[in-house]
Amino acid sequence: MNIKNGVFILFFIWNYSINGQTKWSFEFCGGAPYNMPSHIKIHQTGFNDLTISNAQFYSEPFALPPYWDWRFCQMKNNRIIELEAIHQKLYLSNKPPEIKRFSISHGFNMFFINYGKINKANCIFRTGLGAVLTHPETEIRGYAFEDKGAFLNTIYYLSGPAINLSAGKRWYLIKRLYFNTEIKTTLAYVKIPVALGYAKVFTSSIQLVAGLGINFVSKE
Image (cartoon, rainbow, N blue to C red; front, top):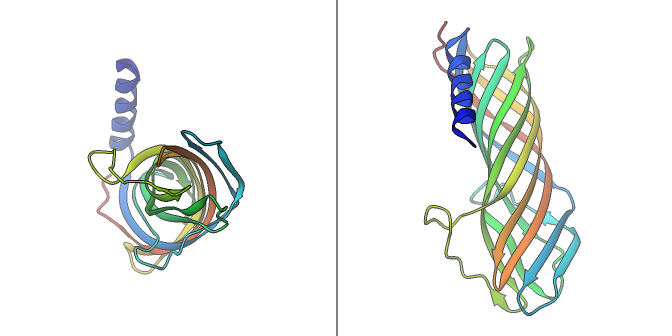
């Protein structure tokens, strides 16, 4: 990104924030994902590549640490801009003989910048682009991955892009407190480290989400 593009984006965000009626909200939700069949390709030095074209992942969303989804939202008129974070977990169930363990838990963390619209019935339709931070735990062909971390000296790896599509509705309990219900789909393509190499994973899931949100003081 060059300087001119960066200045334009900052100006757009600033202009969006100060013109018109602006409201802020925060949501924290739980949920349950259904992981659709995925594709995995594993490369290890000294071995032939291993491909799993119908990889089946399960998530255990209610086991600690559970699935969670939090979101900061700025709304002006009927348009919204959001920062969203989702904690997923992936465990491969149909492991071939070469794989003793293949999981991305603690977790498969997706971060999005969303744009959407809200209508008079408090229904929200949004789309988002983002990135995935992963914590892989694998043992393939007798070689266990030694977790050293790579992102800001943590146990997480910046692994690839993700897309977020969702539709939801706010049900107001009192003036500023509401109950959020939502269905979403996420798609991600990640490259994670494994012992002696790497694995490329394409995942997609459908997620049912529900939780509480609160509107903060708005400005005119």
